[in-house]
Length: 382
Ligand SMILES: Cc1cc2nc3c(=O)[nH]c(=O)nc-3n(C[C@H](O)[C@H](O)[C@H](O)COP(=O)(O)OP(=O)(O)OC[C@H]3O[C@@H](n4cnc5c(N)ncnc54)[C@H](O)[C@@H]3O)c2cc1C
Image 1 (cartoon, rainbow, N blue to C red):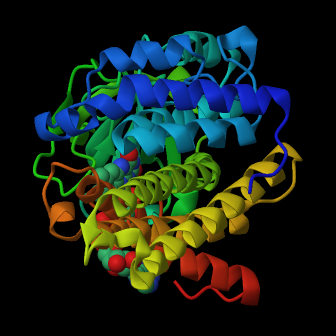
Image 2: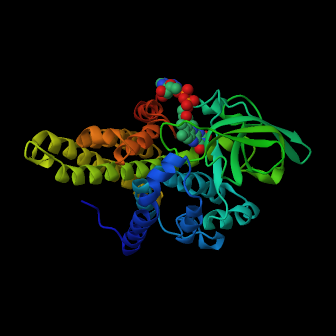
């Protein structure tokens, strides 16, 4: 079913699959119950090069192309979406932005530590009052000599309480997207507080936090990209970020398929395994089609990125389809498990809970339909 992979891509996929099977799958249920993954896994991800994929070796990166990156994220997502999220955000949204928009000093300051897993990063765009309408954010950065004072708050920030650096988007000028700048803010800066958000439906192993800034003082050298160009940084990060969410969704759908096929072969009803019942096969076939389609749409984006071609709309297409497919697949798998799918002795309930957020973050499904519609018609229907 797969396209032909290069030797390097096949090797990194195998490495990630083995890592997921040994270091993630056996612990995922426990981390879900404990509401935290074991953070020891971060250094292991760094040691394998998974936190530096696609980044230059001179900054501690491990090179590789975006297809290799997607293969790794799929395998991590197959193991546990909370672990996959660590990489998607710290590497995908922040380290890659530093590499693309940072000064030499910013790259040397942050990239080696982010690539090795000595430090994690978070991406702070969403606010309590602005989610989909991110361009209207109200967190402010005001000039104070050659420094900035940042005040405001951010909501639902992945890696929030684990990160040593936050990529913070704040208003420095006019209303709308042209008045936004980006800053790399160490999380131990005075005035920066972080509050964990508990009671999530899924991604329970992830540190999701509310951040608040009370006149947090950073030097102008902490600004990432030009003043007033912060929204460009955010949108560039999210365009690729959506590809990584899509890859994680393929992982959830594949895990759902594996679990459902295994169970269908074991569980007997009416004197034969339930795999013999046509309507159970229909559920399995529907999952398999979703997995294959979501994977190919995701790989298409990686291929476009690697060839230096435009990919933003294709990234929306992949993210929209793969996230909805992950929810459908986990739900179909749960149906195959019958009542046993409803208790946490089996992993499918967790797959469904974890999948559910995928249609919400990095652009809701509705927002992606509007982005795709705008690209088709030239009409902005937001
Ligand atoms: C677990 C988790 C982790 C997250 N991690 C991060 C992170 O690391 N960094 C970060 O910055 N953010 C993060 N987010 C925030 C996430 O990106 C937002 O929740 C998302 O953008 C939606 O914003 P909102 O929740 O405010 O919903 P709203 O924007 O209020 O949307 C509510 C509903 O209205 C719909 N809607 C809104 N506008 C339109 C429109 N124009 N047309 C049609 N429908 C519309 C939406 O689709 C949705 O159904 C995370 C969220 C969660 C739940």
